[in-house]
Length: 148
Image (cartoon, rainbow, N blue to C red; front, side, top):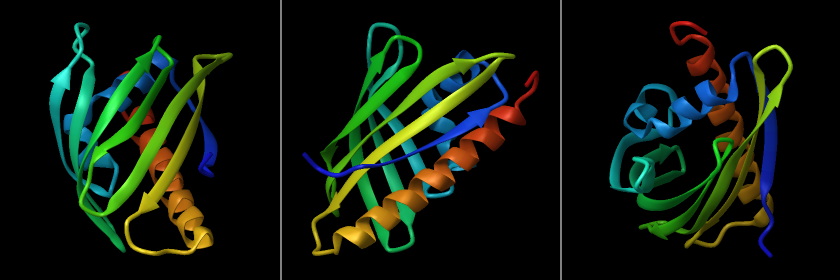
């Protein structure tokens, strides 16, 4: 099994509010930093994204890729790579755990594998940077939303 990197953050909002931001792919370029374009290609019968095309610029990694999303209840979403120019794998998930006082612990797991040779240590560092930026951006976005 491939190694993964994970990290967690506490957000001052209910899980539904956090998931609302995670599920709003069209606005990813506004808060994620690395995502320059996001286009939902397919949705499920509940209107949730099933396939999303993302244009990514994360410094050393620039890519145009498509991810397939799986939604589990209201508190978990995972994704896997469908196609990519640079990546062999991009698998991850957000798991939301409700906390007292309308707070949410968000755990982000990520596994990245690139087509070009790269040391495992460098890949893990890249995963950690991506996760930390995404969690910080998510927290800022959710907590600055009207009514937060």
